[in-house]
Length: 326
Image (spheres, rainbow, N blue to C red):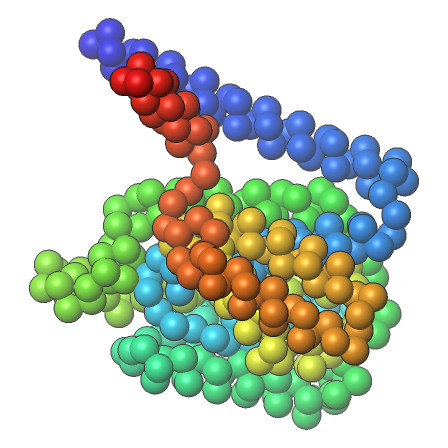
């Protein structure tokens, strides 16, 4: 009984520390950005990091935890971006409503597309999701209401640090708690052995569609934030190359590691920014950096592990045991 109370107190203390850390980081960011301590180049990259974190963590739910090979994430981002923009610019809805409806629209698209295609596996699923992303892009190219190939210009900048930061926190908290629930164990069992999971009574199609819809919802959220920070959206912004970028972040961070996806989103956004001065050979250098990283760390930066305080405490304990043994 005493041990249980101590465990509850320890868990409560951990939650309080996390909340304080989240609030402290928000305040530091708010002071730095609003106080003009960070120039515009770094501000843009900070916002890109936040948007990429949402995209990478949400795709990791599909590819990393559920083991599905999806390469159409930019298509869901486009749905969220365009729906949110139409609602704010053409219909006059508040930003919060537009962001929510854009995210829900992307989630609904994920459900509708996922239901028939997620019976496919491996390469076939990858081709189907790639086809979905291209269908969205070509449709946007031919709809004059949303500007066709020119896209929509002059979108009001409503994405600020608070919206970006708490959207990232929401994405990470929701997906982390989902993975740590019984639903998360079903996702992982599908990744490990889909036939065995079916044999144990898990409805694999239902869980794959669930992962697909939730991942698409957060991709739509990232799209709405992107559109209302960068003033302009075009169909070419959401091409296959964008999906490929997000996939690289997930693989580099480690399939099945949320903290790995966060670290990879930060590293790759910074690498891309650092190579901005070498526009002509930027993609070549970017590819070389990736090749070197994958040669020395093929399982990704974090593998399938998560970075946590308990992990650091365990490592300190291991070192202490080793020292005593010596």
